[in-house]
Length: 249
Image (tube, rainbow, N blue to C red; front, side):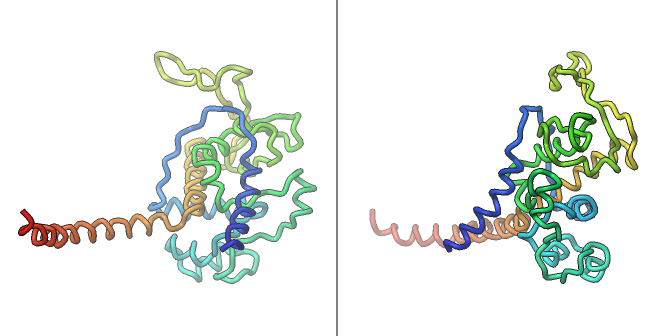
């Protein structure tokens, strides 16, 4: 038991270091739906194509993901597993920690638990608020995590945007229309339009929410059966109580 607790502590620490940055930037609300397999499948595709090269989710297995997302093992092997791993392997990548630290300044954290540590709202807003900043090594900065060492890996999809708030309050809205008074302006288009990109980010974060707690749907299903069992048990318990107390008075 002690070894398991120590392993969990080391699993959380890298993610906690990733979560250390913060700016007080207003977060967009994110409503996950881990019952939407199509969303999870698309999020998995985006994760494997754009995130897995640096970030592992080494506390879950390919096989469990394939089964939960309804992907046949042969298709999963052919289209998802690129590193020759077996279907029953943990979802690790091949980036060496010392090399990644030299490239990015810090080792990219494992993302298995990031949705529980940081929250889905934070992740969703973070992935949508990269903006051009020539002063940064990768040419971009982030409103949610200022001066983060991570490049904008989804720029191919979103394009590049500039922040035109210039120190204004990003949460301030027009009193009549409700629209934000300042925000981002797209200066270079990507392969997706803004609505498509928002949906892709939604699906990616939805997948990370699932990854952080794969049992949640099964737990809810079991919970309904437990409540039904307790409801049925209430009937004999009530009759037994009446039988036991009928001669007491």
